[in-house]
Amino acid sequence: MAKVVTLGEIMLRLSTEVGTRLSQTAQFAAHYGGGEANVAISLANYGHEVAFATKLPDNSLGEAVLRHLRGAQVQTDYILKGGARLGTYYLETGVGERAAKVIYDRAGSSFATVSDNEWADLDLFADVDIFHISGITAALSEDWQALTVTLMRQAKAAGCRISFDVNYRGNLWSQAAAGRALETILPEVDYCSAGEMDALYLLGIPAYQGDGNGLVYYYQAIQERFPNIQVLYATKRQVHSASHNVLTGTLWLGGNYFESKAHDIDPIVDRVGGGDAFSAGVLHGLLAGHDGQAIIEFATAASALKHTVSGDDNQFSLAEVSAFVTSGSGKIVR
Image 1 (cartoon, rainbow, N blue to C red):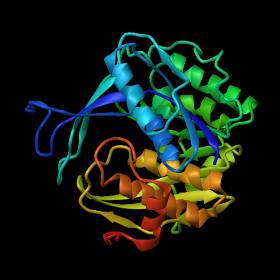
Image 2 (cartoon, rainbow, N blue to C red):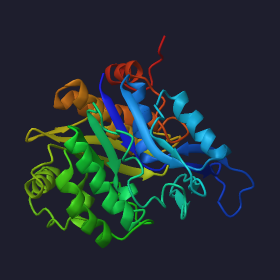
Image 3 (spheres, rainbow, N blue to C red):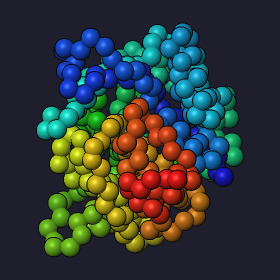
Image 4 (cartoon, helix red, strand yellow):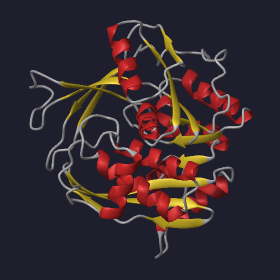
């Protein structure tokens, strides 16, 4: 299997019970997660050698994060200690027609306050196949916008392919700020998770006016602007309610468009991390040399399965996802 490094912030998530509002709750369910950490855990589940780089406070919460990652077979050699605190976010769990709600409490965290490359002496990218990072990291500060590009260039110089998930979060930065940052980030990227909304509102690509497949138009437009990007992928989500979605995966690979079968997910146990499970599924398929249809079926199945378990990270092995692709949903595994 391949060697992968992901880098980003992992946080403590405090979630309400279904049916309880943040302003009314007396207790929270605690989970650790973050986009790049979730991708790392999925890829480790599939047998890849994966290291996660971040910075944690030197306290009990930092130790809990290390235990969480090590329990998932993710290497922690590139995790730094220091800083004031672990970032936190609060999730008001959605149900029915009421959407989920997130409140961030991450200002001044150990990771967010990093201002230069503190991993410079750690040989972060030696013999690494893929370096994965996301737009959430770049959104944390101007320092992190610049550092994201610096790390990508160092990884590329070491022979890595660069994986980037746009992962736009309106609570962290504006569309205009994200668009400006992407103009400097995307020229370094080989594999990119980006969809129609990213093309329209972050990259300023004109709206599709045709009658055919609009995603093909947007994927082609992104690739024309950034010809270095070899692979583009995204999900299409039909939202019936907060607890009932229909999910379809899409992939642009080698100038061809691939689309998965639709997964009707009802009920959703926990949507958080579904996109990360999808990204990890695509990366696994690329690393394994699968064809486009096999890649998108596996990735979408992995994402659908993630919706059925609590917490940020996917908890399914390569064999379990592969069996789900083959057998379909709802069948008893005997």
